[in-house]
Length: 98
Image (cartoon, rainbow, N blue to C red; front, side, top):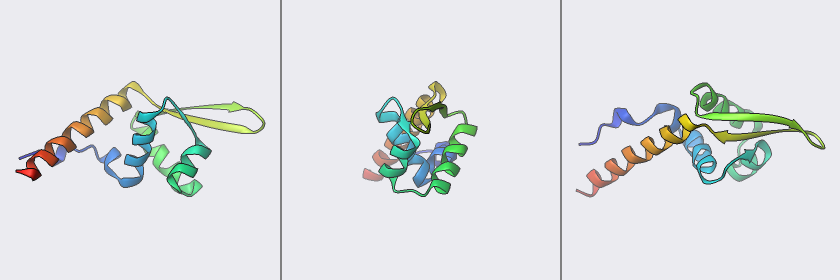
């Protein structure tokens, strides 16, 4: 039986899982691109990104272009945590197929 306690709670919430998935698929995403892709409000997205940042999974950079722009990317720790999370999910799926 898989150990469900190994699912990282910082990643497991639906919105944060979506963010981690996007960040794993591309080197970096701007705040506006994440917001558009995920159809999240500013407040909801900021809250999830803050949680992932505090966990050490996401880093951000701020730069001034035509307007201020914040870009997000997975950290090494974030990539490893996401990989571990997917491994646990795979074990759960295999166990469910019996």
